[in-house]
Structures are given as structure tokens and as C-alpha cells.
Length: 78
Image (cartoon, rainbow, N blue to C red; front, side):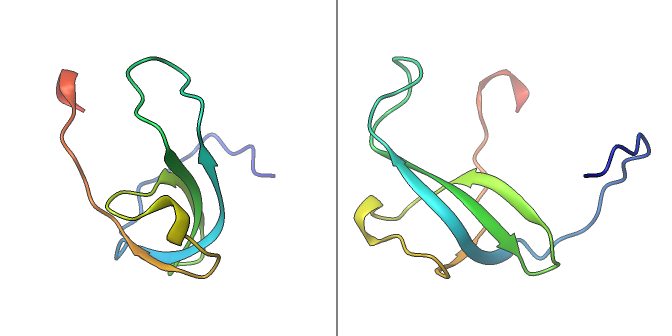
């Protein structure tokens, strides 16, 4: 709902709970390994973020499951 142009970075503990999820079985591109789990996370600070589940089994995911950020360096400096 916000259309503000003045965005700022906010610190986060990097923890939250899964609000919603889906298991993807058909990759968008051949480089994607399936299955993978796309998740929406209710962050402890009160906002939501879209991510993917890393280090968990796709059939063990449930709403309310606690998660913690895990960064992975990617090609191209990301």
C-alpha cells in the first residue's frame, strides 16, 4: 500500500516465522534445482520478506515454523 519513494535500510535480527509457502517442482530456468520451497516470512520486527528455504526438507515445512537468515555468496558479486 505504500508508494513512498524514500526507502531506508533497517537492521534485522534475521529471524522470523513462515507465514506461507509453496513447493516448486517445475524450475523457472534449467539452473534451478527442484524441488525448492518459496516462503513468505513474518520477520520478528513486524515486516514480511519473500525467500526460499535453505537446509530443510521440502516436506517438513509448516506455517509458523521458525527460520533464520542464511546468506550465500553468489556469482557476479551478489
